[in-house]
Length: 296
Image (cartoon, rainbow, N blue to C red):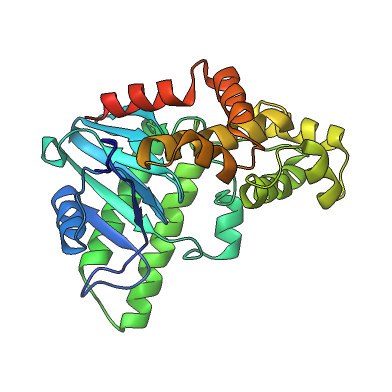
């Protein structure tokens, strides 16, 4: 808790579990809570994860928030939290039975990462509920993954690769379920490069023209590729990323609005406040007060 009463967000790197195969973690909910405690973390505190976290509920209900949006995970549902997102369990883990699969960027092969779109923005909702044959397939992969993760059979090197391949199968299954796709079009390559550039430089420039010049595309090409992939124009995409980071900093740090605006590349506090009010409908101070109050 900082001096303004905000809950500090914890930056959480991926750390292998003691005695487990390296590279991934496959845990039930008690195991997830124990893992957090072993690293000195409060499992119910807001965390900015540096790894992928796949969560599923077998029974009961689990409430979570991802980047300030509340979600309810029920039987058979999956939630995919991506690196850099702020995640918080909003109900007790003991109220549900389920599993979590954790793995860092770079854990899966390049071909798997490309097909599963691991370098693309997350779907608009991190929740998906497999149905019918899809549900059976995903459940079967998870059951096998949990079994293999717990039991080392044969050489350790082979065991590590079996777990890696099963995580890849699970990720590929989930990435291509209805509702999980973030978009595929002929413009995806242009958008992929644009998205990576925005993630790298959104604190330096908010102008589509600057990204177009650096990437060798026209503004029109970037706008069309972005709209086809995520349903909004290139300028809106940049502004959405800036707004999200502004909200993260307002809720989880004690930085002033002036300091946040400066960090995000605005020339002064007035311009930042106008941007924030135009995009969110409230001032930075108003958002901070309302969001912080909701988390107490």
